[in-house]
Every structure is written in structure tokens, then in C-alpha cells.
Amino acid sequence: MQDIKPRDVQVASVGAGDTSVVRSRTWERLKFEVEYSLQRGTTANSYLIQADKTALLDPPGESFTEIYLQQLQQCINLSQLDYIILGHVNPNRTVTLKALLELAPQVTLVCSKPGAVALRTAFSEQELKIWVPRADETLDLGQGHQLQFIPIPTPRWPDGLCTYDPKSRILFTDKLFGAHVCGDEVFDENWKLLDEDRRYYYDCLHAAQYRQVEAALDKIAPFRAKFYAPAHGPIVRYSLSRLTHDYQQWSQQQTDKEMSVALIYASAYGNTATLAQAIAKGITKAGVAVESINCESAEPAEIEAAVEKCDGFIIGSPTLGGHAPTQIQTALGIVLSTAAKTKLAGVFGSFGWSG
Ligand SMILES: Cc1cc2nc3c(=O)[nH]c(=O)nc-3n(C[C@H](O)[C@H](O)[C@H](O)COP(=O)(O)O)c2cc1C
Image 1 (tube, rainbow, N blue to C red):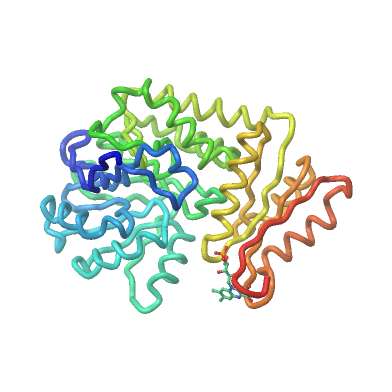
Image 2 (cartoon, rainbow, N blue to C red):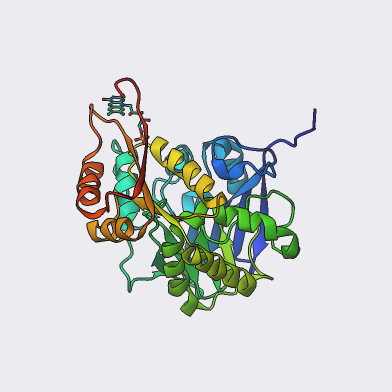
């Protein structure tokens, strides 16, 4: 059997020295996410900015809670941590977040508006200090670290939020510009070797939300970042313009495809969403464009436009309390009144007992 290194946490300096990356590394294949199937492991990147105030970005999931906190406590005294910024709220991270809040109850959580709703649901028993920055609001950590925030909503992460630090010119891109690879390199000096992994990552995570990715690229362009600091894989330093261009190209390729499928779904606990991602990946692989629509965050006009335009559509729903959720029922109404009867249709779902 192949020897697999144990999980570990690597800390390295980024930029001017007051910013660090804390990389929670797993070296093996993870089976719970479709996109991990390349078997090259991954890193869950968390970032620490230590100025007059201290901010921590994106603590990792629960499989790292203990070793991550051990490493973090060697970098800072948690009683002096001021902010935790969340690029998106993931139920898998709740355990680490809970542990952090016990050690640092003074902390203010910073996230998008939908992120705040998800946080309040996950921590329904606890009073949280949450700050949702408005479009024109910044977070001043002192010493030039005046953080700006860019909401990047996508079907898969409706609460996505990027953060820009003008001092270090780092754009914390969360799910954009990542790669599922694990190694010692903190930066992308060997970026040519990352081509395949980056494309695979895009295809798995972003191809089915290419419209929102295009919108995101337009939003982040004015910041003129020098580094992209993603949630997974190496920090993008040497290939920033190349990777930005790749994302534009790959998104354009989706638009140019001859056939397209609208993938309409809702998911309360993530199971139907996981199925939707696997289906999207399969369709993308077959050379057909997919437009993912998460009914919980999509406007009716968006569903209508996608159904009109597509060559076929697929609807996915969980069963909750014996029914499809209201958002799916609304979407079905739109489909019935919009779609030509000749359009190909498919359904999938996730349920426990009644079907
Ligand atoms: C509050 C609640 C109500 C549920 N009601 C039903 C039901 O009526 N029939 C059924 O077959 N499964 C039921 N389930 C199981 C879900 O359908 C199942 O967990 C499904 O995978 C959830 O999909 P999601 O993660 O995409 O939301 C219920 C689950 C929950 C938590």
C-alpha cells in the first residue's frame, strides 16, 4: 500500500510579513466531494493579517480543528483576535468556528448578508457578533490594511465574499482560482504544472456557474491585485494574469457550446446540491454547457430566461415534510408556463423514506 503522509498544518509568510497563510494539508484523496477525485490531496487555506487589529480568514473544516488551533495559537494569542472573515459559510466549518469562539469570544464575524443568515441558523443557541459590510464599507485593521469586500454570489455559494487588502494587494478569492493539490509550495512558482489541476478545478466547481464567474471577474478586475489568495492550493503570484485570462476563456467556452442544459435545484442540507454538482460535472464532460440555478437564491426571471434558452432542463429536489420545497414548486410553475413541450427534461432527488 502507498504510504500516505498524515494531515498537517503549514504556516508561511505572504506579502509584507504581517500576513500569513495557514495551510491545513491533506495528502490523500477525499471521497466526499466530486472534485477531489484527482487524488492529489488539497489544502484548506486560512489567512491571518496582523496589524493594529488582527483578522483571520476562513478557518478550515472539522477534520483539522485540533491541529489547526494548535498552530494558530503559536502565531497569535487568540484573546487578541479581533475579526474572523468568512468567504462563505460552510456547515463543515462550524466545529472549528465554535472552538475558536470559545477561545476568542470577543471576535466579530464578518460575512455577507446570506452568510449571516446561515451563521445564525448554525449557531441558533448563541449570540454572535456579526458584521455585514455594506458596499461602501471597509474594515480598517491599521497600518494601511483597510480591507474592502466584494460579494460574489454563485448558485453553489450564494453567500460568497471576496476580501481585498490594498496594503499587501492580496485579493482573498475564496473558491475562485484554487486548485486541489497538496505540496510544500506556498506559491505557484511551478504554475505550468498546475494547468491541468486548475482546469479540472474550474470544470468541477465553476463551469456550471460560468455566468456568475464572468460577473465576478468583472467585479474584481478594478482592484489590480498582485496576489490571489484562494481557499485551496497554491497562492497565485506568478501566473495571476494568465489564470485570470484562463478563467475568462473557460467561461467563454461554456457560452460558445452548441447545446446547453439548465440544472435547476434546491437543497436544504446539501445532499441534492452534491448530486447536482456530480450531474453538472458529467454533462460538462460530455461537451454540453450547464447553467446551474439554485432556486433558493435565483430570481424567477433568471429561471425563466434559462429555461427558454436551454435545449433541455433537469430539476432536482429533496423531499421535506412529504413535499418538494416551495422554491422548487415555484420553479416548476415557471417551467410549465415557459418551456416548449419538445424540450428534453430530467429529474433527480434526494429523500429519506417516502420518496
Ligand atoms: C425536516 C426534514 C424533513 C424531511 N422529510 C422527509 C419526508 O417527508 N420524506 C422523505 O422521504 N425524506 C424526508 N427527509 C429526508 C430528506 O429528504 C433527506 O435528508 C434529503 O437527503 C435532504 O436533501 P437536501 O440535503 O438536499 O436538503 C426529511 C429531512 C428533514 C431534515
